[in-house]
Amino acid sequence: MARERQPLWYLFLLLKNRWFLVKALLIVMVPTVILTYMMTEKYTVTTVIMPPEEQTTSGLTIAGLGLAEFAGYFGGGMGFSLPLMTTLSDVYEEILNSRSLAESVILSTAYLDSTDLRETYEADRQLGLYWARNKFRDNFKVSITPTGFLKIEFTSSDPWYAVEVSEAVIVSLDSINSEITASRLEQARIFLGQRAQMAESSLVAAGDAIRQFEEEHGLVAPEEELLSYISNLAELKTQYATLISEISALRQGISGAPSATILFKERKAAELLEVIGMLESGIPAPGYEEIMPSVSLEEYPEITLQYAILRADYEMSLQITNAVKISLQEAIAAEERQQTHIRILDPPRHPGWKSKPKKSLIWIEVFLLAFVSLFAFLVARENIRAVRERKPELWEPWRRLLDDMKREMSFRRKKGDR
Image 1 (tube, rainbow, N blue to C red):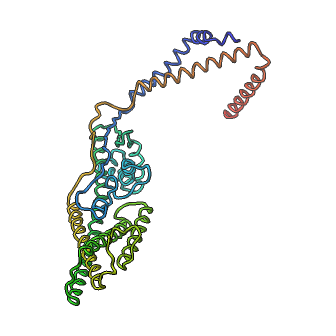
Image 2 (image 1 turned 180 degrees about the horizontal axis):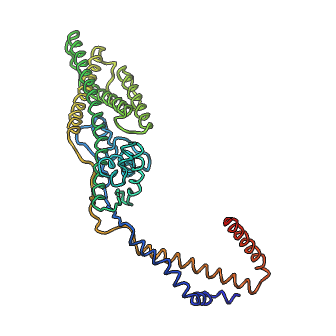
Image 3 (image 1 turned 90 degrees about the vertical axis):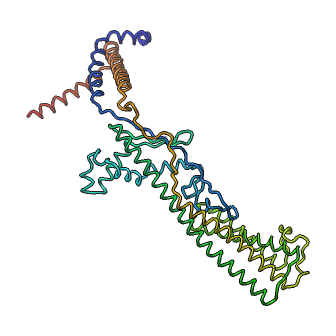
């Protein structure tokens, strides 16, 4: 038995049953070849989109919060912050796989007619869209390449129709992206417009306070050391007002950031407010000694200190007003400027050759599967014959079982005839 299971034994088995294998393989392969030639040829149109690039906007910033941040541009301009280990390509992939984009493409092309779902759609809109989305996703594939590019594939029996659908996908993606961008720019403009009005009101109030002070007490000429104090105090107040604006923008969803960022900015603003209060009261603030180098507020009259605080408020309001007005003009210009954010590396074109069916692969797979199955059948048959001839006692229970099964089948057949 051991020698019978050597490789030569298997070769002998194949040669012994060569005509059986040939006939069986022909019975399997001939219909397979005919069916592959009858299968509908399909074409896959491939489109490659370059990764979205980070948008930057020139111009002044307010303590690090420029127009780009006000508009919600964090790494590409989609208008929200991204979770850890998430890229803009991942966001675009989700948009491409979304129901909204699929329905937009289905309704903007003749997809309902190509899938014979027009009557279903007219009878029941939601049901028609459901089946259309399922068929669309069967032929639509989005993937991210190792380098971060977006690869879009659409398969159809008509290559030019596949090109049309791929172009509609790009148009829908660009429309959704532009809508998000326009919405964020509008929010930024409205937010900056409100801040500009608040800054102008603050500037007018600070100017009126100085003029009223001068009318009551006359002109005050602060010394050089006090001018330095006024300038530095105004800078601190500007930083505080800017932090408040940033926190307001974050809480209103104008720009995206995790909650930890908001908490950090709130703590920084509280610290600055405490320091400003200490400096205005003449108390040295730890860590801010450079604000008042060699200046002792006790040496100055109270009127001079009041004037210094009013001047600091006025300079702070003036800086913020000028900066916010510039940012507001940039926001208005950015909102009016139309930009296309989708960059295509490989536009949709005729593929030049079918993608399905791959006849040669089908033939090879069917041939290998049939050959292995037939070879396993031959080995099993030879083993059964060997057991029947050499060890009949082991085969006897199986023989009785097979006889019982035959009798049952024969009984059922006769009963069915009656």
